[in-house]
Amino acid sequence: MYKKVLSCALSCATLLTLCPHKSLQAYPIYSSYLETQINKYANDYLRQEGVDSQTIPSKLRWEYESNLEKASNRLRECISTSYFGSVDDAKVRQVVKEELASFARTMHSIIKAEALDIKVTEQVHNELFSQGLTPDDIPSELVSEYLQIGHKVMVKLRNTMREDQRTYVRINEIEKTVRDEFASFISYVKSLHTGHGNFSSHFSFWNWIFGPAIAQPTAPSYVSSQSDRVKRFELEARTKEAAERVMRLNCLDPTSLSNRVSPDYQRKLDVIRTRMRNDMSINNRDYVYLEDLERTARQELQSVIDKATFKNETCSICLEGYTPGERVGILNCSSAHAYHKDCIYPWLERDTSCPLCRKTNVIVAKQETVP
Image 1 (cartoon, one colour):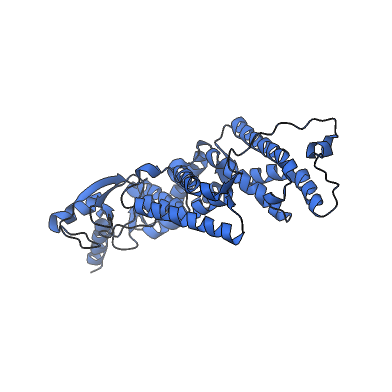
Image 2: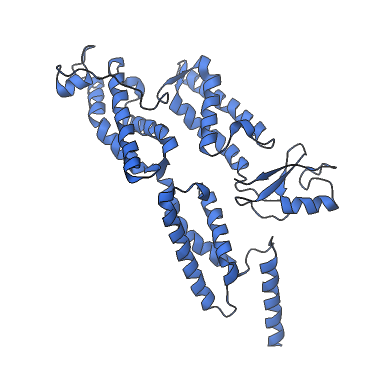
């Protein structure tokens, strides 16, 4: 009797291992299949944390691979002590999550070069807000000094990246650099608004530090147009520009979005413009800060980005999620529903209707690769 039960258990374990789309939540993983599952669950976990494993900077790649190796060693030890020579699928997920948790925090703490100007502007404004100031409180006579200091911050951070041969800086590096470089300037501006400064239109921040003999330098913009104000008449074009930057930062081309995503993208553009117009009305002004526009675009477009990358979506045929590199078939139904390519073609051989909306006589109109 015992032999029959054992034989049945082994047969079930083998069947579950061979099945490409599992309906059960837990199943045994054997040594030969372990590395594949570790990589799959690592990608899944990082995507849940908003990290694309394909865009990990080379300087951090070693840390990522080291954590995967630690997970592998822990799981192989479990397998070596297991009676069946396997480890439970849930255990693999748990160990991968534990080993990658600190790495996910590391990825959240970095800002890549292409997003540096936006983050620096945001941090400068945070420093102002912490002292009860806003960019509007900077006198026009001091704007050039304000931009000059910001430019110095950008140069320092880019030098840090170049010297360390990396394509990112950490958020705490940005915060410290901004705080160090802007401390005196913010202190002075604050003194003007609290009545402790002897301000005149001829008085310069640089004069205040070095004396009137020092000429005021020419101040280039440190974040190109990121510190500009967006006027009401500019809102249409500037919203489109901001949205395109957000999409490209997420490796998506806004001019070639699929039919299942493009309508959502266009709707979100209208939502962003509406929010900005409401902001103008509430604050009784005819402009918004470009930084606020960028932040709103990132917030509103996140759902579009998630949809374009199939984040948190599942194929309704096999009930499995999508992983990077998989091929997906998009049907020509009104909602352009997507399924695993290996699932939808066998389905259409039996049934020519969409599994979700049930539209009949559908075909796979397009194939995409999950980013």
